[in-house]
Length: 173
Image (cartoon, rainbow, N blue to C red):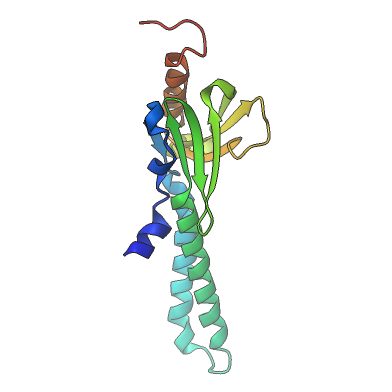
């Protein structure tokens, strides 16, 4: 059970500056649409496994290996998407991702210059969008956050945190 938990849980809380009073405002996982392609891959693999016994014995290895490869790829993509988290705290935004190795990209709220919310047509229909962060340091792992569910609410959440921190104009009590 320990290995399964270590592979599936990115353990966001270990990155918090608790002694500084940092708390999570929102932890964002990918929208469910990112799992559509892995599900299709699993269905294709199952179809290949159903066909496998009816293929000539000399060629049966091919659909079997193709099914295993599809299952492996679908599992890897699912795990990678599940472990990719975007976190908004009262002090910063950060992103944790990676399966075998873990990447952490962080940006203090004071460095966020602009947030663009991109909502493609199909994203507007099913409720996802993409964030594009503009900051003083352009090259970082937080520039593009893709497939964010409820993007308008999440954008407002970030704007509220920035406003409350006193970084943009006067605080209103």
